[in-house]
Image (cartoon, rainbow, N blue to C red; front, top):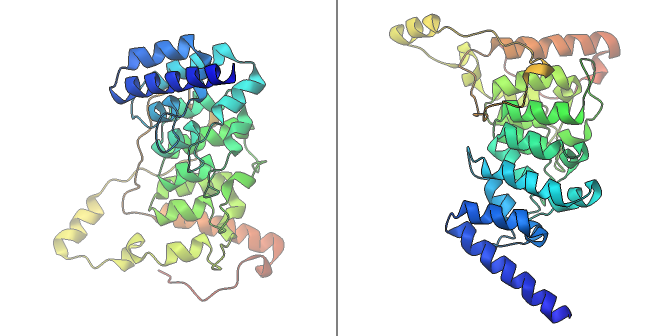
Length: 293
């Protein structure tokens, strides 16, 4: 009996793998609708399921339909286990959706159970960390508000913001020059401004080490200076929860803030001044002086 079941599972994996590799999406969907055992079948050498593959495809609606099929076959506890199926790197399908910055897929999977947002991969990276690492501003906001469904105030859940090496989502956003995302993170997680990693570096140190982020760090010729002053840059605003994602949300595209970062620097200074006033200078990290304007 066990041999027969094992043989059937191998047959399902082989058939599903063939359809997925050939791009036969309608066949993959049919198997997901008819055969629940296909939902956790790992069909690549990397241990990916068909849902992993769909989650890593940009602008692909198949993943949404697959999640709906999975939801129709399992109760909530079993459904969470199915969606927690990981590959050899420890990534779930939701990890891949977060890395892609795919707001719609993040929403439809994470809303099954908000604690799915807490999953870490083999590198101890959470969904929030991956979204920040690849500059997915809207995906980061979507995941935040799914896990922290509150309006305003200090977020309730900081644990998803840090990797084992001490780097936070704010470190990651600044490292990638995603300053628009960093601006939103500062508003949502103000304590991260003074958080240091294993090397003793805070996000402020990383920002200070990027001279190109400041006007004084760039040497402009006459033409470049004229162009610089003519660039029209919209002032960044704190994102409102209700505008982050809807049922008709479009796919997120990683965005880079133009080379005018004074708004970000002002946000840092506002938080630091507040912390210094309330807790005193000792609350701030002790470090070598950073570059100033």
